[in-house]
Image (cartoon, rainbow, N blue to C red; front, side, top):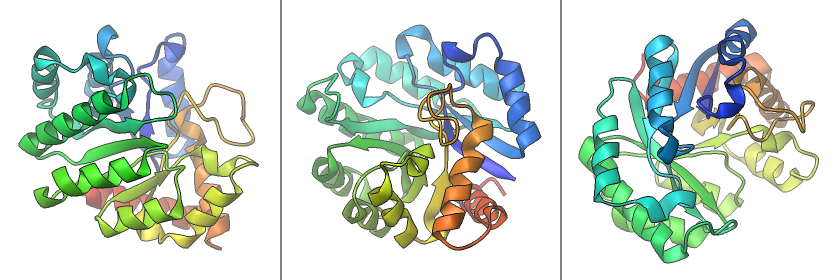
Length: 259
């Protein structure tokens, strides 16, 4: 069985066939889907993700404010996120972090929102799900200064950064999650990084509806296609897709204490 550790299945792009999409995932052997609930906090994306978690026993969820929306974080939203984090199927705080590629919010604002949410996650004793793009040094610095003493860890999701950051993440106790990006023709360096990392510290994800893997490039992504990422990791580690499924699923269950 496979686990899609990061999916945005609450997004409007699934409004016409969400139940069918979820059935396709089950039919493909997807055992768990994590519905990341922070796609659009203004449009109640957390509530939509939590409703899916209520409806389907194999769906879990998270809370958090994406760095693109960092400028929205205020006391009212902090209170709302804390309340939402008490839902029984919330297993993490995220995705949170820094994105200096799109710069939808100023760097300083992103950093302040990241630090504040680390404090909120600390209070709730929830592991964190990190989004980082073109912000490696600031991400490492903030985690070392504001997180490592919590005794909790986290996940670097949709990893596309350098081997140096991957190595630092492992040293800090984090897991690293790969998406369909590692199947892209242009991702040779990322595949080299993935091949150097121990499978016992890796997860797989889709980050759907984005980043559809080969051979589905250009289409709306969905959880059933996380298998393509597992296939690529299997090739890189000279093992079977089934073994990658087993190891990454065990990693996920152990990390989140799901048995």
